[in-house]
Length: 315
Image (tube, rainbow, N blue to C red; front, side, top):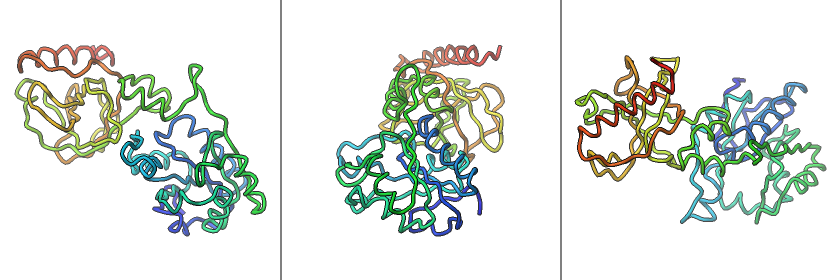
């Protein structure tokens, strides 16, 4: 079996190998260092025992069901999260729809429900604050009690802290919304990134000496509007290239209603319209602002470029 298999539901996961299954369970939005502690425990145990490791995650966020007018904005869309999870040494990622039926399962019935769908389930791995079941009444204690009759082990990982505060998706969301990229990246354990296809733009940047790549990217949680130091990679540049990015509404040149991600590569740019690229965000440079005209904008972009060159020590 491939080590990078993805299943759209528990019912579809019949292709898992007939070996003891070590399953990490959680929403895992952002796949941060705290989440990795849970998943790493499952992977290590599976390797020691000759079993297989997998992740069970959910889509959409439960808040979309319980608070549809004000759902939690997610750090990553479902496919992006699954792609990151598949790099962590698991054999499979199962994305289960979070439906009213799933939410209505009594806490003490959740493990038996899971075991019926994954008959080789040997152990589950969760964070110590994991909650589940109807009314979120289930905790690790309930999970242990309901797992015992089915010979399933339960392991809970303690929360991971950084700078005296637990790492959480909520904490990372706050940092992204305020543009604190270095702090967010430290909690994630990897650079926050956007992925998308380069689309044709109006080529205004080219006319003022700063050609940009326009990226088709619509995140759930929008980072702070502004200018960033970033690195860009893709099939045409496996080693990330330093660049300046602007994410926002472009108030100087248009009255956009939806934000756009534009990237100016520092140096020769190998990318063109139609290319799929990844943009890794390193540092917030300045907030988005409206200038008196295109010439004032060009002058500021020069300053932004110089600041990013200094960031990346490209002199």
